Length: 279
Ligand code: SF4
Image (cartoon, helix red, strand yellow):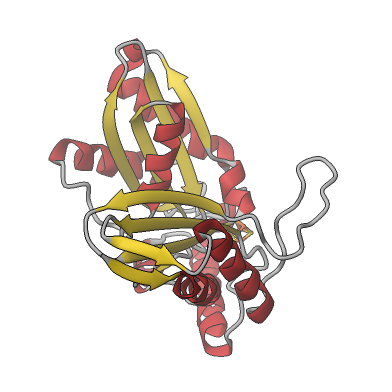
């Protein structure tokens, strides 16, 4: 049994929350560069150049990529052979978010639902805990912007609509979202399970490297087909029109109840920020 002090979790969450907000991953940067090459609209190209320039400045000057520094979604993979000591895991994660917000000058973006009173330090984090084999802890911090999250949906479709109906729903969701989620977007799709599980696998699908294909060739073909359809909508970068509405579509699928066909569409903006550390 390996012992890990929760202070390591505090430090990891703090560092990752700041770093994710400042540095776009290499896969996102590569996808934006490729988008610039294939975008046909002049204004779309200009927007993509601005997004790349914005990301460069953020990295060089250590400033957030976007004023919306996101709600801290934290995935923890906890090895079965780990004993956490020194405090409470949930409190450690929230302390990391608190310290990261303070030291990284990240905008407080979390509030009471009705009074709208700000919590002031970006707590509470949204925490997903998973037990895994091994003696490590993997910490993934995924600050999620409000504009793109607002455009996301879970729907319980009738099984009779089949694959065609599922694809139509997903494309329609992106179409109705228009410029709101700050395109070019990444579309995470979860099909199957229950209402809550579909949403979770859609969010996890976003964490795959951009452009990677689902290992199941049937689902990979669905991803490709959806990406084509979405990029034919003409929404384009920031909604100004163009070919590149989405950088990628990532689909995950699990079995569902015989009476159900849950579909979750989790839309992510071009500021696709996430980072991870293995302790
Ligand atoms: S949706 Fe993304 S890019 Fe747009 S304001 Fe929110 S965090 Fe920023």
